[in-house]
Image (cartoon, rainbow, N blue to C red; front, side):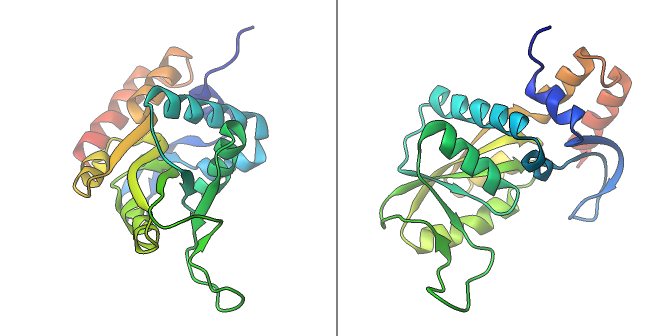
Length: 199
């Protein structure tokens, strides 16, 4: 039997769920993607890291280090770093009130280029917020790499800040693979896509 796709793996381990879910924005969504579960499934996390490393090569991205966004993006960033041998830093959600009180963990130099890494993108707001501590520290961020683009305006929002989005999958591609694998009906797929276009 052949190797399963990353999309099917994500569904099988519960990272992609269908139903009714309240999002951070308050909207009710027919799909929920929770990539924090990847930490419990190292084989799937490895496949995700390999896919993201492949996207870096395919897009010919040039940068000095990875910068992962806590919390969901951090284990993915570490896995991509292990897969590629590239160094990693990450902006803290809050500054430490002891020790060095750093806002960014890991070594870097002002003027270096960082590739921002996260699990997925919806509107792009969290990515824009994560840029600030990096750019304030003198780092340049030209590109963002995610596993999944929910196709709800994130790429356009980033472009407004001069940043290019690179996604391994669009949500449409994930849904298509699940339909082809018999894990999702075409009717449910169409409903979800209609909801995404409306929101």
